Length: 137
Image (tube, rainbow, N blue to C red):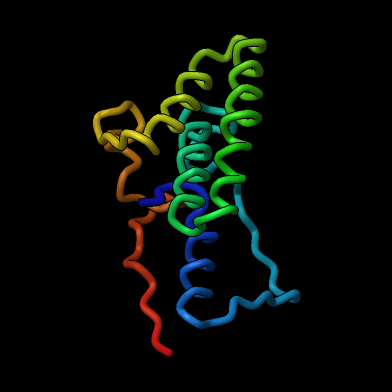
């Protein structure tokens, strides 16, 4: 399940696959206070960004698209981020990044981020998460 990050993209893909169109309203204006729930560059953000990026691709794409994604992940994303975090001395972000990657291959609720009781079940603005979107054709 998506907790932070990528949930909107997942909704759009699920809606599109159900035969609906996803539209953009260019006159709409949305104000978004980034990182209201997690700190700007914290380990929680790092964990959920990589975890959900991989989860999104696993759920929504297959074949060559998924293959290209995983090749890029293994040969570019993981080495680049690992070296970047090591270079900056960001050990917590490195651990969170690797744990987010690991979760996609060996899911576990026992890791540091999956069992954070203060955040689970709460939306981005401290409000309870809503029920899944139900649509009819």
